[in-house]
Amino acid sequence: MKSLFLTVAALVAVPVFAQSHAIGVQVVPGNSDPVSQEIADRLSGKIGSSARYSLVSGASAVILLSADCLPNIVNERQIGIVCQSSLDFWPIDGVPLSTNLAGFIVEGDESYVAERLFDSFVKNTSDEKLAAARKLFKESLNVAIAMFPHGVN
Image (cartoon, rainbow, N blue to C red; front, side, top):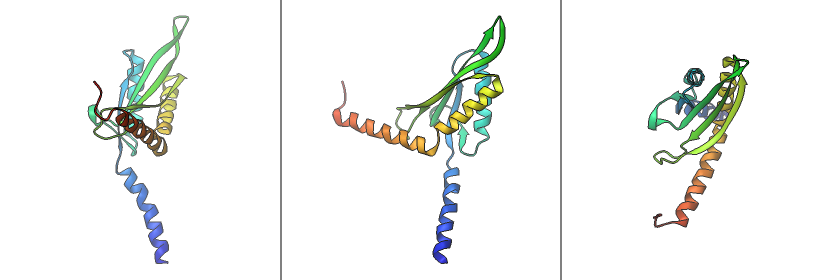
């Protein structure tokens, strides 16, 4: 019975620990079109209300989410927007090199687009996806260091 209690206690403790270390995310518009700023603001609201992520700026960001959007205009009338997200991930604290994570492209009205981009962001920044990207990044960095142990001129 004591063993069962310890096992259950360990399983319960893991999510609490994981949630206490929010991932720092900076959200930026990908271009100067006002719709990019609107979508970036909507994404910031969704990400900022999540316990998994925290909104940060500058060098404290672990992930940079860029929303590059344009209005979808037909016959001089806006019928929606199209947006592409891109994700830059800094997998090693203190190393100023990043890697790209999968982005997403979607079209529709502002609410639909913001929701789909957020869903894609959550999916592409899962613990499993970040761990895989971190592992590949470290392997690639170690290969580069091994190839040029004395630096590059």
